[in-house]
View 1 (cartoon, rainbow, N blue to C red):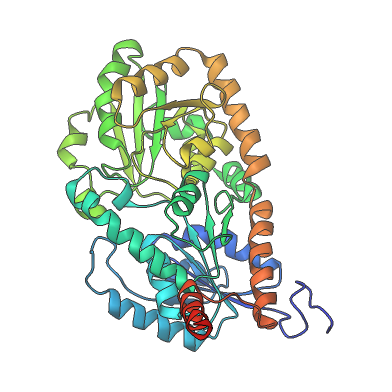
View 2 (view 1 turned 120 degrees about the vertical axis):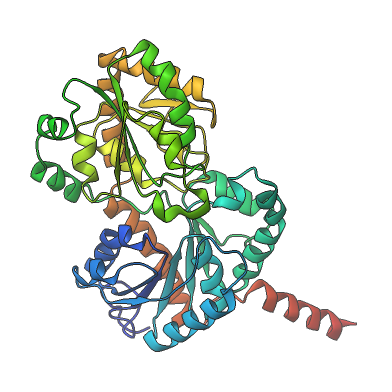
Length: 416
């Protein structure tokens, strides 16, 4: 046995090269990639987003294109592009995030390099009740099964998604691993809060000095539950007339899923729309409560981690991912998705009892620091990478289910 490198991978892999592939929000994982770099990895990011954010932190970046709203068109071209990029970059291991990259990356790499993919939610197909989404679910399952042929390990961010994949045998037995979220940099969040304007100053900036502020952060889409929150507003105002609602996140970029501007304008006197912002920690600091009525099958929503770390009580939907962060009645409340009245009632309960809200917020902050802090999450990913890199270096990577099936059929034929 040769001497082991600093990561314990063996002398041939002193600084393993990890290529991390994601979509347009991949920059949210910069802290994750920087933490991996601290552990001795050479890291390259591949995404459809702006490379300037990565380069600012010294992370090499390569860009590729795909339309996240399109179904079927362009996939072959994206697979070829990813295959070319991976061959040029020559990584030791590949990590993928997000629905389409998780499907396309294993098909592009095809076993040439170990691929670890993280299922951070099941996306529109398993969140929408539209007939088109329901019809696509069998095809989605088939694609996940095919992608598993060339996946070394599949990481799940919540138990619901892991149970779903295992129940329908969409991954090989024993290849799944639960790691709750991509982690949050607690220290960086605290620094951002310290450097921000005081909450009172921000309230004055938006004309919300005496308001009870309910804040939502996320894409302004129907699946994120924005219409449910809007529907809840009259019920909340009937009990808490000083309540005001701040919506933070992109709308124009959300294509057919975007909430219509006219829907929001109906409540213009009570709703402040800020669009996409880069000062979310500061904005959370001025709020009294975080509302997240999503209908989406989330992984572990980063916005809930940020809201919890900001010490906010949370009212969220009882959906996969949300229930991994919010314990009903302890650090917030969970309500049924699409139930505007239940959402309103729980928001009113917290706004009406500031002692309760403060206690819930403190519990949220403690929970996030204990369970979701970035170093602990990265430790778990390093364990996954180590085991696969060691197996690769010793030629012990398990064959894909497809290869196993072919081998078993040949063996059965030889026995006959």
